[in-house]
Image (cartoon, rainbow, N blue to C red; front, side, top):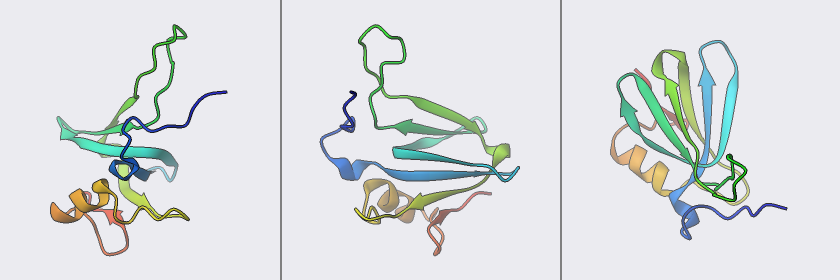
Amino acid sequence: MTSTVPVTSDANAYCTLSVRRVGGSRDVHDYARILGVRDGFLFLEDGMLTDRSGNGIRTAQVHAIPLAEIAAVDVETHADDDENSETTIGLESAGMLNFDGSVYVR
């Protein structure tokens, strides 16, 4: 059985992010944070350590999603309420968070 402990002991550094694609599909990333936007890609990091190599080395997974494929990125809220997560606060302070909780995408 694998552990579900986030990369950091401060669980508020991560929140659940939902990436809505232009084609209508949606990817949900639990315990994720936005690393930034660069060269036409949105970079997300999963806070859950996984052993993708099968060698006992647990690392966080980084996703590079082309901006052209993204309709919106939503900060999901649920029972443990991540509205005050560092990701949400960072997005709000950068002026990238819409009133409905979705992330502004140009």
